[in-house]
Image 1: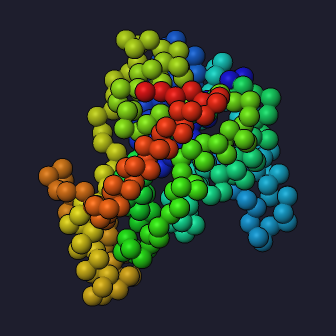
Image 2: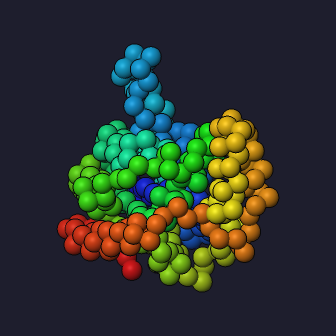
Length: 291
């Protein structure tokens, strides 16, 4: 059984792709099916989580693995191939800032999943994104699931020289040494989407469903962040958290500048580091580079 595992890095249009691929799997003639994100996150992603401290160690992990195996077997009986996608498989956006590193626990999380997928033909798909835009958007996403904190209270400089995208991808290769790994730049997705979809679902371009015109959630605007920072400073974190969603809805729109916390020096450094990461990725043996 072929399993295409999309390790959806946060803020690389993962939600958009998940919606689109769910539809693609329902097209007549498609050679693969795609469970919804809700199902993947309920049944498969928990396998990647370490057992809780209160559990009896391996018992909890084994229950997760057995439940996920039964779910996977059911889906494998429906088509020749299966497309699985969830950005939380490799970690959470909050942990990026807590650990000051890009997906520091990826090896351990994927090892548990690799053991469960043993015996299947696995292909792994992953996008990377320019560091400054990625970290800015990941911060905005983190705020939607937790208390409001000003950016500079959350962000600490990350050592991207020692742990950039190329290091994350190399760790993935080490966990899945027999898997074919396909990587692309998020910035090139619009051009690459048809070829990626064709490779996953065996559909010709004319047979692909139209793109969903709904837009994924945008990053916070600069004005919204300034207002929330002022509320945080004047009234406190609890009130800033309470009104966050309302401020985001009211102070939004395509005419407003996106939140951008970086200095000119930081932007330049991120851009240069991203170029070096892309060069390193394209030189990795066993990696198929798109675009």
